[in-house]
Length: 264
Length: 326
Image (cartoon, rainbow over all chains, first blue to last red; front, side, top):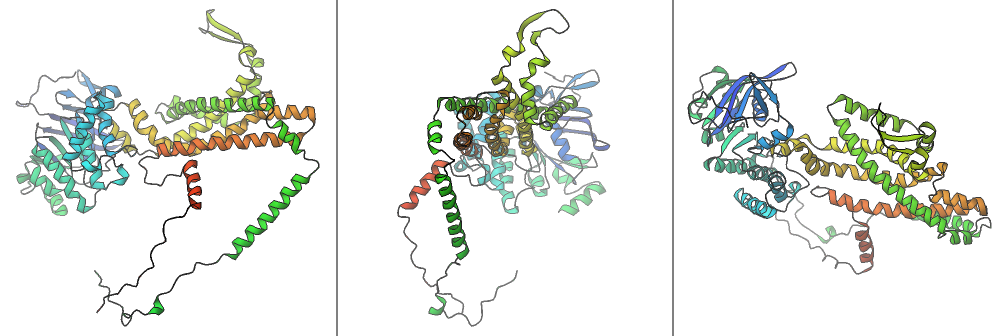
């Protein structure tokens, strides 16, 4: 285990610590020295124009993307790497897989497994990865399905469900692993406008229940009402961060103001 | 928003509007069918009355012991070759998709060799393996240590050589089918599996392969049928499968055409039986697909039988609906 001892931040230590992360795709630098902290039980919303690096940053948190430098620590564990001196070495896929169990992710395109029913989608990882009993996993899955308001769709295949329903099942699937933190990568961007509300309602309820969440979204209304911290990114750097009352209603930087005016 | 105005002056519905639609007649379909049936009847008549075609011989040899043994061998070789070549194909496809250039290069080279040379040449070559290597040895290279050694011709008899040739050749074709199936699965599936803490192997087994199967099964059904027929090529190295057996018999009784008919009857029967599992596999892996699944042979049969039974009652006559447009 890679427990980081000398934390410089004041106690209690942040659940997710992103420190000076750098990342390039070829010659294009997507993340330039990004640092960010997310405390347990809080909601962080990442805003920014497309290509600003916010989705990439999110995907680095559960190591779907490698990083070129810096460190990402979740719940005291360095994610995807082992540190020796001032170098970090990438771990094996199996080691990374076990770290990812504690980090749930919800995708823009839902990515439900199309050959499994809603229930099978939710049960698969708890049974196959953690080794829970099928009966216990099914019971928990039914509770989660009820929580996202889709109990009667347990035996439907994804193709038989609307986008909004699929996304709520994807949320339930991620929650079944009992993650410490949930990552949402533009969860409502692929939905018909009338279905966005249902998904946002589920997310709001999660936030109320104290789930730690990092959300990449263009829903300014959601950010304003739910976020504890709003982060505006552009060109691979954090331009400005703060509570919604400050960042959304009274942005300090010209770039932030221009972006907010264009989306609101 | 455009508002569609009610049509002017056509609100009154009269009996003149209550007409029945008659489907278009198809006289050419009927005349075409009749012409074909006449040609077919003439052909059958010429076959049955042909003094050069000995139907009695066909009847006698269709269940001849040598033929039946040949049929068994054909089925056995087809099954072994398909199962082993499919496993090999998954390995080759995984190698080909690997980021390691040596692995993907090796897989490419394999496909290049086996797809680029005629199958019959490969079969004869495996039959002659003993000319190339007199002995096959399992030991530590460059030392005198030998665990196991065998004379090539003892191990690689005609059956083994033939099965090996068909398996290795088929693996090259199947690997491309498997690879196409794997590529067809959206990359988001892998990411979703990884984000749930699944390992790469688990992801492949539970998430990617089952989805790839939907793309893989129809062409693999084709390949299986093609394999069954390709076993006849093994005649060149004297594997006593059904075609070899038929030719051997015709060499004795000089009934060449009759024995070819016997072999053809068996090939037709076997390929028909072989195409049945495909329906069930397609349905198994088609779960969750929005496309309608093909009916199984059983369902088709039931549908045909149901056709003779009285169907659902005809719908009640349509009633004129009053259009309110005032």
